[in-house]
Figure 1: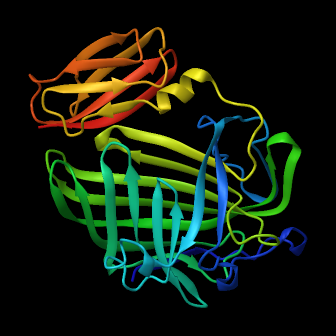
Figure 2: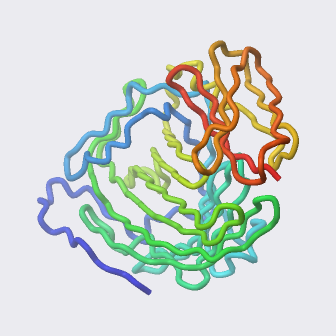
Length: 341
């Protein structure tokens, strides 16, 4: 197992040391919470680190009550039990990600994850060759390490496929301070856990190697709950033209984000895979909306305006492969991935 301790924090005064992560802080099976999806344009505050800092998300609106349930499941009771036989807990982020783990008094181990994408479906990643260490206990402000992992990824791009997968992660507790959420809800004594990982899935049909990059910030008020009270996740799959932020708060904002951004995020592109036509359905009619289909080389192969809440595009003449459907309205752009076969 490749592990490198990068930083052992000991330079900070105890006046700012609020807590530390231990095995006792892990949520038990059945624990759950609801987080509300807020403006995806909210900043990550990547550079706001250290002791006594402030992260201010108080002015960012939500998406009309859109939320995700976070639940700790028993892996044996999930449909993925056979894929993760050594896991003892699974963190399920509704309709997004399921992370399978086990732990000891000295570390928490990741056995893999299931990533759920609206365009490409489920990607089941299993670290059965080299597992991923996610926490080293006790884990305190300034502590950081890297770890390599290796296994397989199973997915469906026109047909069920299993490929070799490997990568590396860096985990750190990079900040302690005050988290300001909507409508005057301030949380002090908050610790931020940052996880950055990069997973390479080899020899994906029609594409080649695909790299899934994720940076996730989890905010914890350990004095009151073992579940995160705020999560900022950035996911990027460059080869598929996918890049997005999912920002979730334990406080539902009274304000909402712009209408165009909300409507485009709910756009549906089907069927997928497609052969003759691609249908695009919007929740409501938007004016000045453009649709472009871009191939894997970045070339625009089709461009059309949308003047209603539905359009059907003829793709019968396109070559087989992966394409990106870009829907834009002003400065707001939503990208979907589709397979032509």
